[in-house]
Image (cartoon, rainbow, N blue to C red; front, side, top):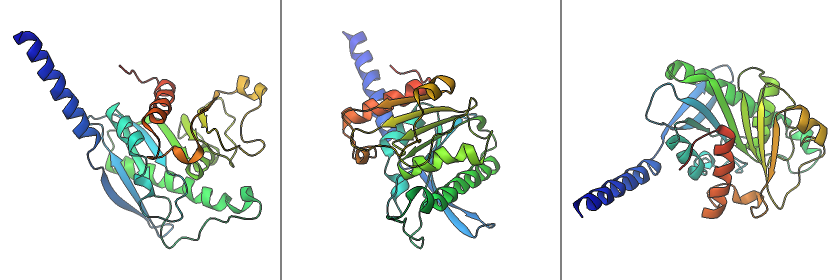
Length: 247
């Protein structure tokens, strides 16, 4: 009986320690890019050990809300628990222009994706100065919607920096066709990508691009609005792509 009580106590302690860690507040700081005269707020989720691989997360369009980078905690927390050093970037500032809602979106929104890619590059450079012990040979980008468009653009603009990207329903920017970048794209049940964004059947065989459709998840349900079932499904696909062991 004492043996079972001890096991139950240990299991309970592990549960509470994991829950406390998962719900801890990230470190929030602002880097300043002197070259662009731009402030770049970030939230840092630390895994608790050195030499961790790095994940850069980019949020969906939030109409310049200042807390958009904190709206995916189910994802950023779990990735940190799995041993990743996670950086969530606030791409929009209150003083920024709003993203155009008319015209050729692939043209008028391109400058916003370019700025996002520049933010990602700047943050990686800043991290290397602040956290030189991290594993920068295995950087993964994850983004949702507009942030996924930025993430898709990044390896095209900055080849050789990242080796994996995960897009949560990017709709406008084409996914990179490269043998050096592995791609996972999780697709919603209610939105369609523009022509050419997703690979053809032939391209999917030629390049390491894996497209997964989520039949019960809408485009707007991929942040913290996701249900527990949706979160489990999204995380499951991400963990398998990252080859993370789960119990």
